[in-house]
Image 1 (cartoon, helix red, strand yellow):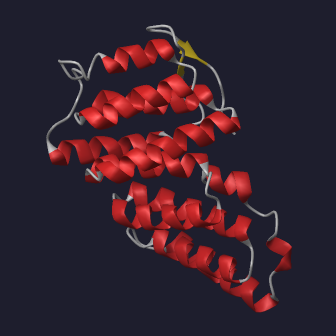
Image 2 (image 1 turned 180 degrees about the vertical axis):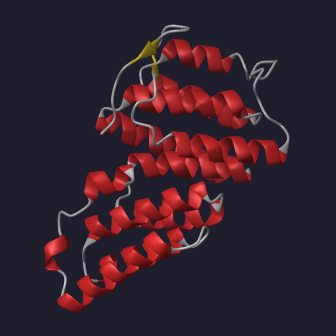
Length: 220
């Protein structure tokens, strides 16, 4: 079960008409039996149906499962489309904004990456998930060779209360880029897709604002 499904699933599941419940159950079974490449499609349809009958939380849960499936199947544009549906329902959905930023970097959509980075940092600060977001933002800056994005990542780290990490990142804009920056388009796409999948790991170690140390803040 996806993180979003655990977070939002079931809170309004008792309000759907019987025929809708039957169809949602059918789509869940379809997802379980689907061949690789089609799992996300079934969950996406279930999300659309739940949203149509006014079950926003349940729709977000299905959409979260669709995103997880599409990412695992390396269908990043389909994952992006579903993520945008979540943002229309939950504009401050933290994990989804993180995923969208990674997908923007993978596709080298720099303008959108900057917008989603800003929204991700703001939502994470508002939600109190500073260390988890800082960990993701620092990793984004480490892999990106785009100086404008790296500078924006440094600003985001300042916003999240990680000024030392922000200083480290800014050094990558003044001359030598990060030694791990990826310039090959396909290699960057693959690395960002893998990072988007890992971003859902609730047990991942998180950075602190001290070099070479990690924190233990847990997202929810």
